[in-house]
Image (cartoon, rainbow, N blue to C red):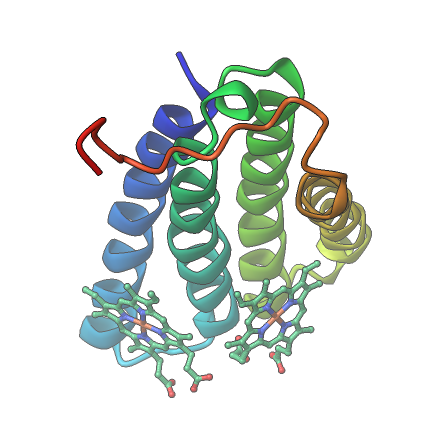
Length: 135
Ligand code: HEM
Ligand code: HEM
């Protein structure tokens, strides 16, 4: 399994859950968990899908263990953040420290991603250009 295929799979699971939450909010006319819905969709669906596209274009990075760890850390952080934020907005304020810890997991995963983006191109990353020999 590559980092991109893991990203795409988890992203799709997140948006299915996020859309179900959205429909649940609309049906019950209770939007109290809106921040959890927004972050599940934006961190879980949009951001993970963007990571997947980035990794897919860099085959060496895509096959690396650190990229896999980045995707897993981001995904676990997002799921915990979503549950904790929903709990807080449903009145379970004891979930506050859990939301805090998970936000640092997500930040940590973004710092790993920032390392990939900023490190010198000579560190083994190849960008797929899709050029044929005739080009
Ligand atoms: C079946 C699909 C969806 C339904 C039924 C749905 C429903 C809702 C509802 C009822 C709200 C609360 C609006 C409010 O109280 O002002 C909301 C907010 C939000 N939704 Fe969705 N949603 C869906 C999919 C998505 C997706 C796919 C995304 C992101 C890619 C998304 C992003 C957001 C965001 C960012 C907010 C917060 C907007 C704000 O700050 O006012 N939603 N959604
Ligand atoms: C460590 C990561 C993050 C933390 C701790 C965080 C925290 C927050 C907080 C506290 C709010 C205000 C919620 C409220 O007033 O009820 C908020 C709103 C929002 N955030 Fe984030 N955020 C994070 C990452 C992101 C990212 C990466 C995106 C987009 C890709 C995003 C998109 C939004 C949007 C659209 C809103 C307004 C909708 C809402 O109220 O839920 N956030 N965020």
